[in-house]
Each structure stands twice: as C-alpha cells, then as structure tokens.
Length: 265
Image 1 (tube, rainbow, N blue to C red):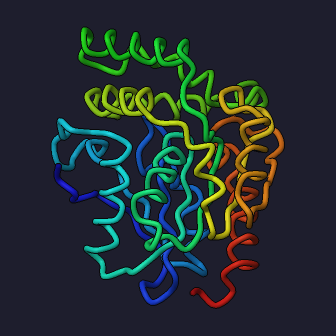
Image 2: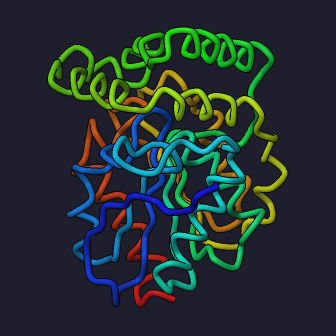
Image 3: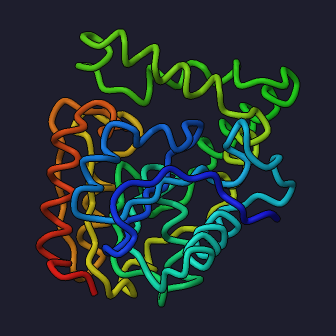
C-alpha cells in the first residue's frame, strides 16, 4: 500500500506534534475549523487516510485499520518525528487502538472522540456490509448520504442547515472506494476493550452529548479502562463536535494537552 498521505498542517514543526485522524467518509477537511486553533501551541498534522484524498494517490486495494495505523507511522517517519499525540474521531479512534497495539513507542498520548473500544455487533456488521454492496453497485457514496442525519446532533440538525449541507458535501467528495474499504475495515475490527488496560500514556475521551452513534457507556468504558484518563462531554454536539462546537472542542483538547504535556515530552 502507498503510505504517501495528503496532509493539512498548522503550527511550527519545532513544537510537539498532534496528529488528527478523521472519521469515516469525511477526510482531513473535518478538522478545518479547529486546525489553526490547535496549531497556536502545537505542530498539528491532519492527514487524509489512505484513499480519502480525491486528488491524492489512488485508493489502495488492501485497506484495513492496521494499514491506516501503519500509514500514520509512515507519516511520522517521513517527517522525522519520533512520536506524537494522536486524536481520532469515530473510525479514527478505532485506528488509534490498532496504532497503540502495533507501534506504542510512537505514541505520546491518545485522544478518542465519539468512538468505542468494542467491536461491531452482528447487526451493525451486517448493516455495514449491506451499505458496501449498495455503494459497489452504485459506484458512489449516494447510498450512505443519510449518514448526515445520524452523525450530527439534534440541536445542530434543527439550527444549522449550513452544517448539514457541509457534512453532505464531505460525504459526496469521499471516493466511493474509500468509503467501501472503510466500512469493510470497521466491520472486521477486533474488540479493543482489553487493550485499554495496556495504555500507559495519557488518554482523553471526548463525546458529544447528543451523539446517537457512540453511546455514553462506550465513552465511559474508554475513560475507565485506561489508567491515565480524562473524559469530557460536549453539550449539544453529536458525533462530529469539531464541526458542531469547534471552539469548545479546541479549548477542551488544548486544556488536556497543556495539563499532560506542558513541555512536550
């Protein structure tokens, strides 16, 4: 698989590095509203995971969460970065569990946003694979456009038609092959609940209070399972709080970073 990732960047490269790992069917544009805010004190990288950049390398055939994790390590290698703090949303969070298992020496801290440690239920796995079949047939992301009304919170859906349109556009611009492989990768992921006890670095668990996809219980499991953890609830946000509440999201993330990494590592 090609490990060349298209990447947005903020902050000075001589500062500690924070890598932002996007959710399913969104891409690096997910972080646009928080990138500069986080870059005031950190060197921030926001890559497109393999296959996600519409103008980047072609979608590889061997996509998995392990491959996503390996691509993140290769990103650090390509820039001469020994380790970083990683913040992953939803599928990005699933990827961070694989990263910790495969390359813990490259990880200074982990922030999980609206994600879960457990594997898919049989019903959820079947739903993903049904969506995969529909996208393959349509050769587009049109069959998953209904996601927008699941990933945004009720408050956002009622008050932010501009944001609804924006999330629709993120899904539309995702290469359909990347969306297919992403669903397949998430459906095949292992349960990472037992892995939590092995995480020795600082952990942050962030969750939008109106998230209909990642439960409060899943949020609590991550926070309770890792020894050096904190949890933050983001009121009135759904599954994508970096879009719905960018100032609150950036402030909560910066506060955690400053407490645990006041002088880098």
